[in-house]
Image (cartoon, rainbow, N blue to C red; front, side, top):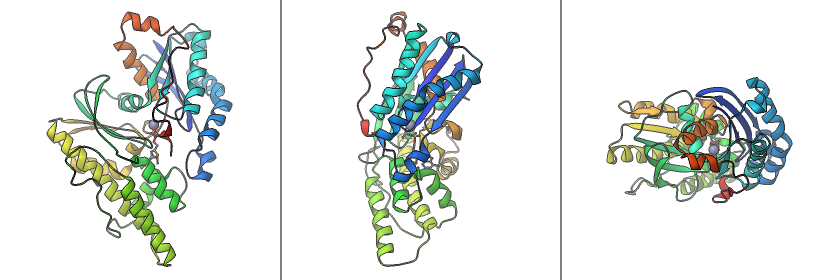
Length: 339
Ligand code: KG4
Ligand code: ZN
């Protein structure tokens, strides 16, 4: 089966094609340059830029895979959560493609896509704990088998990636802030500033990042207004240390209480080098799966992978229903996915 998948939930337009388990191509058109000026994604600009490239990106993927549209067997696209305008462009283009070539059309959940990024080059085994950390989400998920996911903890306010982006914006570091803060952290002193670890004493699996974000921003503003010298690297390292420790704390608690020996890390923040190091140091007795860097942030390869597994779970009737075009509502929940 050859799957063509489209991902456009935020500021990337991406199209991937996979033949069976083999990924043939994963074209990602990023809009970072467009949004960096504003320190975050501007939804209206994102949708308009998607309109301009969507057909080109689909064509490029077909050319790179050396395929014709009629070679495709299944079309998939991210349905949500995400920015509604961005989602609509990818969904409508993908569904139109499916209609023209009489193909089944499978709408998918963006977060499930992130989870299956780990399956692109590897095999996922269940039961697993999933740590989903992105610009819009911070979740701990107890997963018994494919697509049987129970969220056991979530952020009460900002997502972890969002807090990275907001701290970076105040430091004038550009967008997205995560990779920049991660890089600067290496050269900084993590003890230079003491910020409290959020939710350290709570007895659940929830997270909170808005208090930490405000504490860091207040500190920066204080230092600036009092003309005190400081190293941006020290702020980055001190912030990252506490943000990551709060994540590790909850992961450790969930692994112990649920007696799980497998951890899957998913989402853009999974690209964080500091986190990867800490996971290695802390969980040597646990099987930890983290996607390669290129599959951590938004991309269609993870949506194609998710489609591969999702399609297998469908009944005959559900597969036939994939030809009922135009009846799948967009997921409008969590429209404010972007920062
Ligand atoms: O998964 P993703 O591409 O989009 C969402 O679904 O939100 O994640 C984007 C987020 C941004 O907030 C970005 O700053 C963060 O992932 N990110 C990182 C790193 N690379 C990307 N955060 C920390 N360290 C990184 N190396
Ligand atoms: Zn994402």
